[in-house]
Length: 243
Image (cartoon, rainbow, N blue to C red; front, side, top):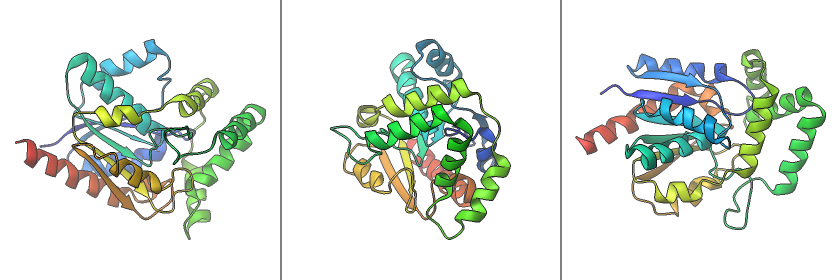
């Protein structure tokens, strides 16, 4: 059965970065709507997105978009008693480390990044783009591809996104989520360690699955065909289980 998929992009680059994945999934027969990040810490903005997302079968996101997908799926389950398939790509439930979740960016490094963004947003976005591509033999080539696709972003949305990255801790959401969830990570990811995959597996949550692929943090862009195949295989498996 073809699924209605809501796909949420990551921080800093805009929706165009995930258009190759959107197109690959569309070619497989799915309906995919692609949206930008939003401020989940604003209850009004969040509720607007919950109402929109409830019309989809699959809530999926990359990086910060994955964290936002976790929140939407959880809110839909709590408010509407509807179960959505949750899929995240290179997404840490807690991007910044805390006492209960160590496999994440340390507080000091994140604060330096946030301060750098305040002082020089354009240069910081460029450095961040390089980090998205870092870790593979094709880093320089990938960075040029990324730069060609990045769209100008609203600075207020980006600042709110940084606040989300700093404050969101969705580990308990994943522990308590009662529907199917798949979390894909990349082995050479410079921003979200592949070790997060093991952390999630060790939660031993029913219906939670993980996968590990080769690539940088930008794997949903640079390996869109491979990732779309994995997603489609997973959705077919869920369909067989639930029918």
